[in-house]
Amino acid sequence: MTAPAIAVTGTGMITPLGSGTAATWEAIRRGTSRDGLAPTPGISRGVRCRTVPAFGTEVLAGRGTAHLDPFIRFALVAVDQAIAEAGLDPKTWDSKRVGVVVGCSFGGAATLGTAHGRLADRGPEAVSPYVHPRSLINMAAGTIAIRHRITGPSHTVAAACASGAAAVGMARDLIRSGTCDIVIACGTDAGVVPVIAAGFDAMGALSDDTGDGASRPFAADRSGFVLSEGAAAVVLERQEAAEARGARSLGRILGYAFTTDAHHPVAPHPDGAGAEAAVRAALDDAGLTTADVEHVNAHGTSTPYNDRSEGRLIGRLFPHRPTVTANKGLLGHSLGAAGAIEAVLTLRTLASGIVPPTANTPEVDPELKDIDLVLGEERMQRPTVAISNSFGFGGANCVLVMGS
Image (cartoon, rainbow, N blue to C red; front, side, top):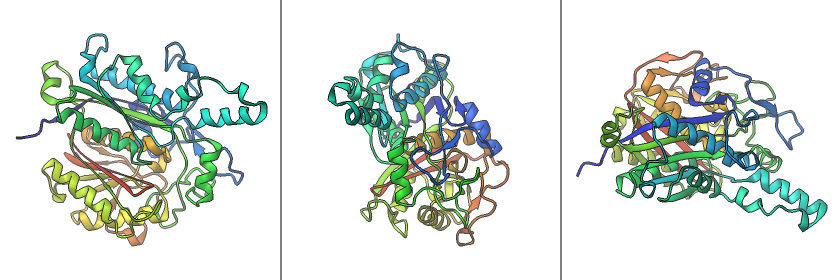
């Protein structure tokens, strides 16, 4: 039996580059922005991060939303936008046939940090009863469900930096299985807090460059990532159902796969065996081969080991040299949100025929010369099939295959 085509009918996003998919897309196309640059909390050596600008009721209305942890607020903004773009009305949908899947790495780290400070300074009486409702990692999904009257499945995926992409894949599976008619997938994280930044810095993952171009995916002198935050969401439906209600398809989720390296807690497998298995399985799921791939949205963290492993993998699997771009050069690394953000940007490439440049990278590392990394300015291409790679600590490898 042929699997049903799964359409994306709505997207939403909030990043350091702006609120709404269009704002981030336009900045990514330009390949340069100083938006969101700020000192990294807890790091004294001048390293900067990218943060979402403060926002109020003009972006997120609703009683009590101002006091939620940022990872929940980001998710609500992205989901509100995605539902609106899809033209859906939660007041009229069959709530038990609607699901939500959220990917996140850290949950309410800011809330827990504040609560711990109060506990240390003033004792247990100073700790708010809202600590857990605002910090538990599943509370983004739970709050989305409450806000939009969703009574179907509510899942949270914690797969480090592959979380957001895995949420999209799991959401696709909920529709394919017949469990849901509509699923909202979201990736969100708000990890720009002192203890998380200090932890990444201690392990040497953050860039040692204090300038605007600190994140340089696939460059010979790459030295690490720039810590970031944000959220992105998609609304998924069966294509025939979307067409029946007159909704516009923004692209399709054709394939999905998830594998595990079983190699090292944080380092990628040196020969990319698990990542290669994920690419091949995702393409097999889509009924496609490596020769069908015309564009790759790379994980591209700007770390020496990840970029080497991924770059060699892309060159090995795709000798026909599809275009490659890496959005983290400009966005920074938003952890559990990254895969969802990059999936939405990949859909924009498919819809527009525009491959945005990889910011801050003047030329590709000579060791990785077999990849066609788009540099300098955007390139017109009109791809019809693309993959988006997301990899994470714990050996997580997630690949999405998308089509126009």
